[in-house]
Image 1 (cartoon, rainbow, N blue to C red):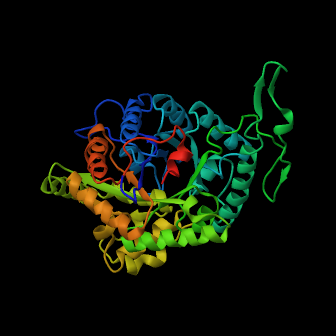
Image 2 (image 1 turned 180 degrees about the vertical axis):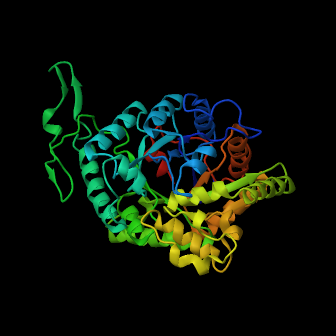
Image 3 (image 1 turned 90 degrees about the horizontal axis):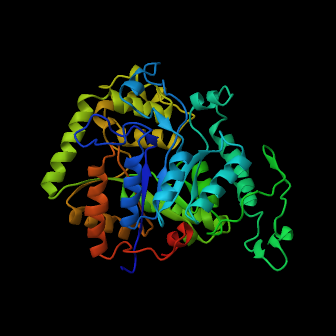
Length: 437
């Protein structure tokens, strides 16, 4: 393996309808009662040596485009969507090495319930579970949980900081050697090593201890996507691995250097914070074949922009139907404000500049690499050499067995031939694999 190998993970856009009307849809992925597609994906990722699969989530029916849910339900944009914890439990039993990380919101779960859920997933996976920490981004979701609106962005992160502290203390309430299973003394667990935490904070409190034993891997892995200054600060304090949502190698390096510096300020070893950058790839047998596929997909999106506009509304809480697609974005930026995903909106505005919404709509805020397996492997190698670490998180808008196999069975072998990624796991535990290099 290379002296500077990097990690691979997968960002799954929710336990939802992935594609139901495409050439490669196949069985599964169209209905929540047929999760075989996800099991096939997880097994393929494990065969390819990925560190983890992250299960994105949201818990509302969007209606932010045109003031109705029509565009979302008609196009199956982020709805229907099932609970990621259910899918996570299925995937733990279909794999033996791949990390399984559901998204669970601090705005929707009580801390004890979340801590117990993740700890249980960690037990049934034998130390391969984690928690993707999100604070929520939609008032519609908040209204499903009895709130009128979400707290403001800064307050959500302040609450999340206390929440993460409490969850961590609950996970640590069982000492590592609390279970003794001593038949001679008829003792299963040493009560002196299972401790109440008596946590009292500004927003949360819990006596503890948790009633689930300590994680086989020490602690479940925390994942976070911190884009705003508040998000970066939170991620650098709590996350074991961070999702980087930026476009260029220069932005990646700035982002990684920044969160590593913030980690040091929090008293952490910066090498204990693995930054994985979101990336989209289009792989073909040849560069020309991949480019034709990429161009066809972009043309289809531009011809029917409703789904893209609805998706932008989903992530930013902005109704893009009221904006002029053919006016420069800069002329309409005064109307673009959000209490949702600020980093997503900021990235869109920075990318757009003086171009129109139509021109920039189909461009992703993360790298889009196109080519044969060897060509894309070379591009990823070059990016990572510039950035310095730590890896990539793949994302596909329309997930099919055909689409993910181009990565697991095409791209990954090309990366392995270059010595850039692992050929086998060194541990049964997610945390130990994540920090192997």
